[in-house]
Image 1 (tube, rainbow, N blue to C red):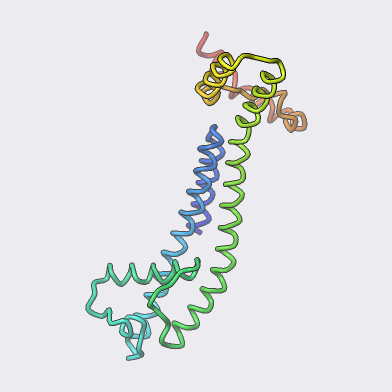
Image 2 (cartoon, one colour):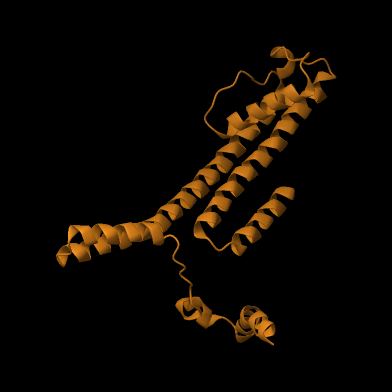
Length: 208
């Protein structure tokens, strides 16, 4: 429930952000944070199973690894390391040593395959979106280069235009107008009215 709630909070934050680059960065941060939270709970469960079976005198990964004398924090970090290696191709020196631990490890491995696949898919989509955003200035620059070369513009003027473009393109404010969003034409009138109120009412109120 907490993980789902955190996902909803991140989604609201993403919806409120205006910059595409910031939006994508927050999306990547969301995926990483969810992975860390899931691994935290898996590590706690892995450690909890050990404490549960240890009362019965059964060997555990803590006793096998010789970590009985280590502090709680070190044991937790070791459990977290084990959990992370289940979700990504990595190595570690901790292995299940009893039925309870091995059963939990098997279930975790199956779950990790699904979670890690979704994580990779989400990260790949975010990176592709960043590439698309970065492609726009490259295409614009290519059009400028093609225009000036076909018109016989001098090298000096061409270089000045290119320099100005590189310095000012990212600072250019390109506002999306309402008519540019085709989907708004299918919005119910009540939603359009509420949207117009939130957009224009504060300005009208400030001028009154």
